[in-house]
Image 1 (cartoon, rainbow, N blue to C red):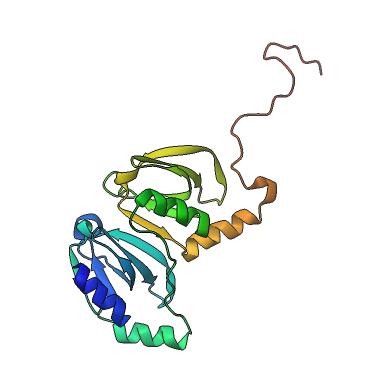
Image 2 (image 1 turned 60 degrees about the vertical axis):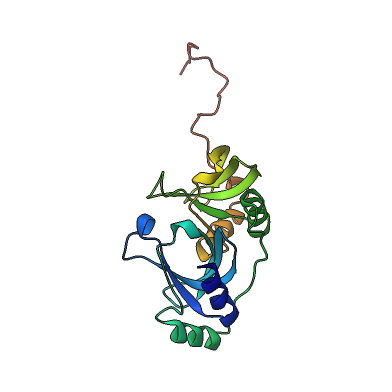
Length: 203
């Protein structure tokens, strides 16, 4: 598969990748191969509106089928050419997963991490603040674009898909930047009003 991925990269063709065990038989990913090694492939995604929409890292062991060129390759490439959109290498290190997460967090601000074998219907989005050979620590951002007050630790090799630099991540950062002092989630605890629970309050 690595040889075919390299052919697709050098020919600048769109590929279609299936991960049937994780995504089902009717779902796929279209994108340009930016880089690949014996373990992972880095794609620049082509979305349904035929625009380049961020990057995705997939593990080769999860790929069940691979089509090169993709069925709509000629059409997709022509539309992207007309729109002036070209493939850009984000120049991230694929050789070390921990380094990759830290680099992406620093360069792009946010990374979306999927752990589909454990949580098939959800993902975590945030910035990785620490990573080693076993675990990573993530400062997460919610769907309301506010940062969580605490960080969370996860097992590094539970990750099945990595995404970054896409329109949704950009939208979260844009909204968060505009919040100013409200950029972190509001505490659920009531503010201390200076009174003890058993204090007498006079009207």
